[in-house]
Image 1 (tube, rainbow, N blue to C red):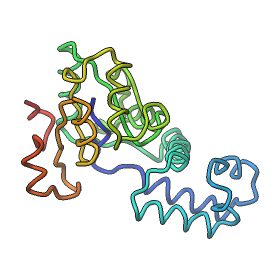
Image 2: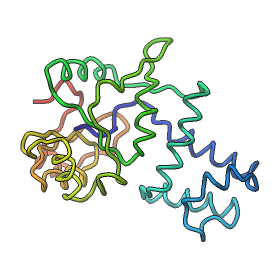
Image 3: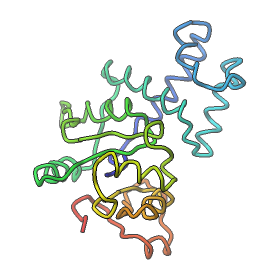
Image 4: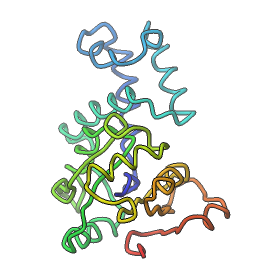
Length: 218
C-alpha cells in the first residue's frame, strides 16, 4: 500500500501557478468561483486573500481536503492539455509490474484526491510518450475516503476495505508520522528515502526499515 512519493517532480507547482493565474485573471468568472467554492468563505473575499491562504497552507504543509480537491481539478486540465506528464524514478514501473505479476494487491493511499491520483498515473512519462499505469492498482484512497494519513483508524479502515489483515499489509511512505500511524494499526511500515525528501533523523532510521528504491523492499 504505497503512498505517492514516486515521482521526480510532483505537479504541485503547476497547480499553484495555475491557481494564481486564474485568481488574477478570472476572479469574477462563475466557473472559477465554482472551482474554489469548497474553500472556507473567509478565505475567498478576493484573489489576494485566497492566494495568501494557499501559501500559508503550503508553508505549514497543511493538507486541507479542499485544497487537494482543487489541485486534482487543475492537474486534470494540465494533463489533458498536455502540459503535464508524470516522471517516475526508474525502479518504479518494473517493480510495480513485478509485484502485480506476483499476485500482490497494489493500492494507493495519498493526501492527494483520488481524482488527482488517477490523473497522476494516467500520463506516466516513458521516453517521448506516456503510459497509463492505473490497471496496476486495485484501489485508491484519500482522506475523504479513509481519513487522515496521520491516524491509526485510517489504516485499519483501508485494511478492512482491502480484505486484508493489517500484518499482511505493507505501507511505504516518506513521512515519519504516517509510518507511525500505520505501525500503530499493525501495518508493516517502511520509510522511502528518495532524493529531495526531508532528511530522516537517526532515531527514525532505527525505528523503521528504510529503503532508497522499491527493489530493496525486504
